[in-house]
Length: 363
Ligand code: 8OZ
Figure 1 (cartoon, protein in one colour):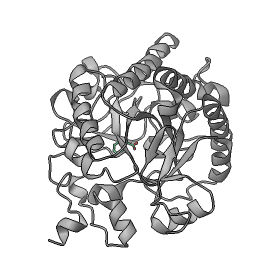
Figure 2 (tube, helix red, strand yellow; figure 1 turned 180 degrees about the vertical axis):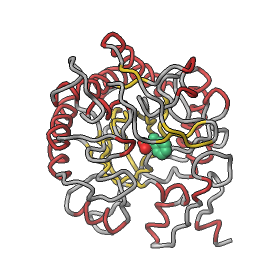
Figure 3 (cartoon, rainbow, N blue to C red; figure 1 turned 45 degrees about the vertical axis):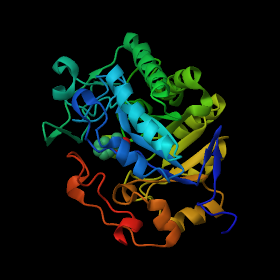
C-alpha cells in the first residue's frame, strides 16, 4: 500500500478512524412514528461501519426544522433513545459515527410544520424546489422571515440537539450548512434579503452559521464539531453573487473556532463538479483542521486528490446506499452493486438493509 492510500488510518481530533473513507449523509425517509430512527437503522448503519466515519442522514433539531416526511429528529427523549440503539450497534462493530443536524428553513411545506404554520427563512422568498410530503412531491410553501428575536432560539435548538446527540452516543456532530437549507439560505444572497445584522454583507450573512457552530462547539467541544458546506451548489434553489468571498470568510472564522472538520460539497450537489468557478484548494488551505471532500469521487479521483494534498478524507454518498461494504469493494477493485432508484426514499428494509456484501454475493 502506498503512503497516500485512502485505506490507511486517520486521526480525526481525538478519534482514530480505520481509513479515510466517509459515508456521506443520505436522506432515506424511513423514520418510524414520532420521527424516531427506523427500526432498521441500527442494522443499516452498522452494516456500513467499516467506513472510517459514518455521518447520519440529516436529522431535525426541532419540529420546525422538518421539511420532508419521515425524516428523523433529535429533539425528543424517544428520538434520543432510538439513536442510542444505532450508535451502540455501530460502536460494537468498531465504527465511528457523527450525527448530521439540520434545519431546512424554507425547504418545507405547511403540512409538515407544527400547527400547519409557514416554514421559516431569512426572507419571505419561496424556494424554487419541491419537497416530499403526503407521499408525493409538492412545491415548497411560501416561508415567513424569522424575526430578530427568534434567532437565538434557532441557535439554542442546534446547541440542544448537539447535547442530545452526545447523550445518544454519537462521536460528534455535523452542522448542515449546505444544500440550500436554513444556514445556507442565510449565507447566500439569493435567499437572504435581510437588512439587519443577519443580512447584507458577507459578515452578516455568515453570522447565523457561525453563531450556531460556536454554540455547538461550546456545548460538546470543537473537537467533536464539524460542518458541511456547499459554496457553489444551486441545490434547493439557492444562489450567491459572491461565493468565493462568502465562503473564504466563513472558513477563516470556522478555523478560528477550531472545529474538527469542514465537509465540502465541491460543485453542484450530486451533479457536475465544475458548475461554477471556485477555488476549493484555496478554501482547504484556509482551514487548520480536517478537510472532507465530497461530490462525484471514485477511488481514482480520491487517490489523486489525496496524493496532491487537496483533501484528508473523502465522503461517498450514493455508492454507500447499494454497497454496505464499499470500503472492501474499493480495496478489492470489485464491482459495485447498482442502486435501485425506487427504494432510495421511503419504505422499509427493501433497498435499505438488503444490499449484499461481496461475501454474501459469493455464497
Ligand atoms: C435528498 C433528499 C432530501 C434531502 C441534502 C438532506 O441534500 C438533503 C436531502 C437530500 O442535504
